[in-house]
Image 1 (tube, rainbow, N blue to C red):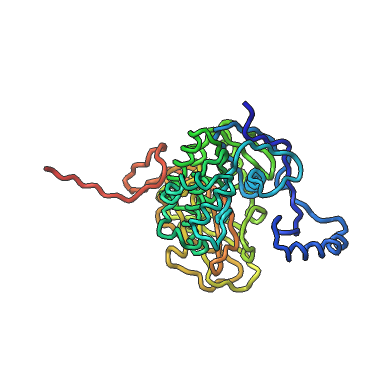
Image 2: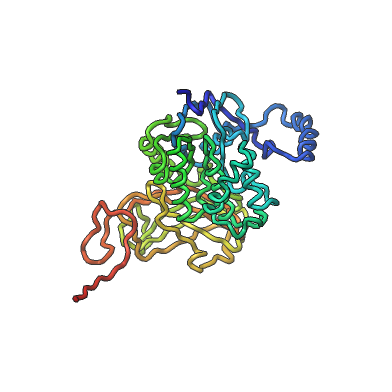
Length: 416
């Protein structure tokens, strides 16, 4: 049987400083056209370029559920945009046999001025479905998305959660041969994510093909039978067994976590504030290489800024398991300890009186916002190695097989 997706020598490069989007208004296109001769003269042919993808090859059979994994900047989203026919490759070829439904980011494929009802029919038409086919699935789509009360409201008034629920429901229920899902599911709550994974299993069991991008390796392992690992636009681990691919990715993450944060280029954000380091200390201000379960720990984020004073600053630390599941989210905003006015260089400290993590290795994501705008965001910024400790103060250590977090507890017994 011929593969449903064949990718051959696929490459894509972008001009740095060039147009931000391949799609523009007429006015923007005319302005860009007028600029080109002068811009070419100024650059003198030395326009820097970046290869988002380079010589990518793989084949996917019908009915396979494939994970596409890799760090930020690996080329995952670019690959999905090419497969979804949103952008064209620079070189190489993609062969697709069947209709493709894509959910790449909140808002993709929806017209903000149209109602939820109208967007369902619009998306179905784009997929090549008849009105009768769309009507046959309409009730299922609405029930899954849980937007009945807002069905005749323009989607520009939807919350991000409502938007993504409806977008996913449309993409998953209109029976495309190929379903492409990016990290956008992170917008939904835990219950919705669970339902989405269940729906994607149903799609796959129905013989359709699913491409799934996620940083959550537990979700990838649960859903996918195969995976491919990308790194800096190239295939680091070829399409194959999902567990082997995840192991290759985790090795990549561990290596990256050893890189000096000041040297990292895969950061996201506005850039006015820059995270330069992340370290851990004990109660006596001694720097720690390892942490013991139950130990008092200071987590310290070092930063520098282009401004002398920073207002309304929020720092957050996400502690994740090896498979990408969030074990704990720490934030000065959640703790009602706002940084209203801080200096342009220094550190922010989160003090944990009794760290509840079970023994194991964890990764840390760090984010700083100012006035609600993300200024710097580094995933896998550091590794936390937690050793067994006397969390309960009883002299008994939790077993090495114990996972997750430990909770303070009290036990009683009652007769009768």
